[in-house]
Image (cartoon, rainbow, N blue to C red; front, side, top):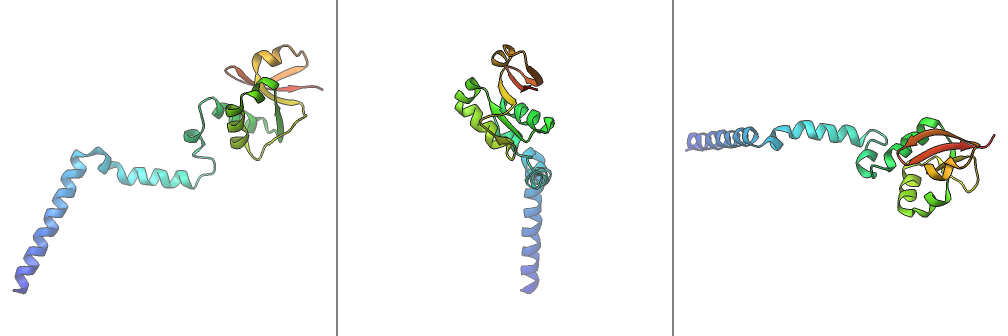
Length: 135
């Protein structure tokens, strides 16, 4: 009687392994699962790794430019400040770089800063620029 249960257990085990093998062969998601899980694990433990997925496409280059310029603080031009949704994403994603009320480094639209001769453009991201205005 005991040997019958061993045979039944072995058959169930083999059937289960066969089903998994077939499923992984015909389902690409199942076959990639360990690699995808490993990639997610690495992403979770890398600082700022998820920003590319979480931020709108217009915000990503602005945050990258702020960090690349090595700024500690910046301010918005009036029109950029009025674009509340875009401005709030930039403030959140660029932390710990501080948004201040007065300063010489600006994030704004190119046409706003083009009229100011004392401004030097540090980075251009489409219609948005990072500029240093002043001495």
